[in-house]
Amino acid sequence: MLRRNQICTNTTEFTKAKAVTFLNPYSFLQIYNANSDLSRFDKICIDGVALKLFLNLAYRDSTIQRLSFDFTSVAHLVFNNAATDSQRGFILGSDQTSNDTFLSKITNMFPGISLDGRSGYFDDAEDLSNSLSALASTDYDFIVIGMGAVKQEEAGIALMDAGFKGRIYTCGGFIHQTAMGDGHYYPGWIDRFNLRFAYRMFKEPSTIKRYLTVYPKAFVLLFRNIKSFK
Image 1 (tube, rainbow, N blue to C red):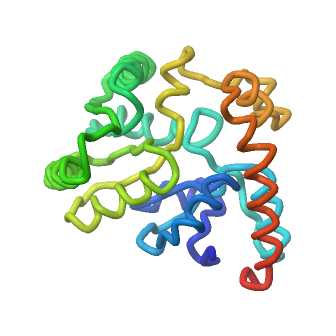
Image 2 (cartoon, rainbow, N blue to C red):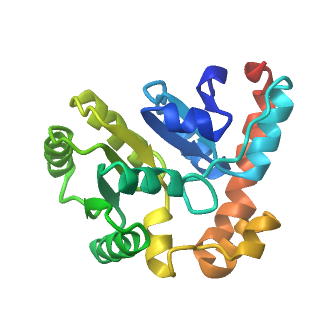
């Protein structure tokens, strides 16, 4: 289960962390079922109001903020700092067309930023391993990984194991979501009223099953194990 000292409660903790991943009920269930070990990540940010409320209930002396790697939350902190401090970043994930579009949009949004990238698809396990080893030997200041739950966490851990010295962030569907729109996936009023899940169901019907079936399963598991969060 989640280690209390790993949970990122606010943006200050996020900016100080070197390796960060993000959990919502869907990714929590995928990672739990895969028996993946997230102990290598400095911080785990809680991406979702429902999961945040659950953990604030479980950890009653904590106040956990919802932190997502998108422009409703912390993504702008990473890219603003990169542009201001002349940092170099690498974007790993989505298909190549979406990755290219993402790089173009972020470059326009943050003048002076230096970003490279490639898709999150590989020929086989050997291609993935070799590519991550090569990437780990570079001097990028940070790598953002959007390959879906479990795969992106495993890629981040592999980069750390291969000796990557920079910062690592997972980002879920942020790359293709940004490529689909004008850079800001969620309209302002959707974000204000915490209706992001409904908007995603509208924009991406493939997520409907996730919200209606997978999320309830995740919370059944969480409540069954609530004592482990004390």
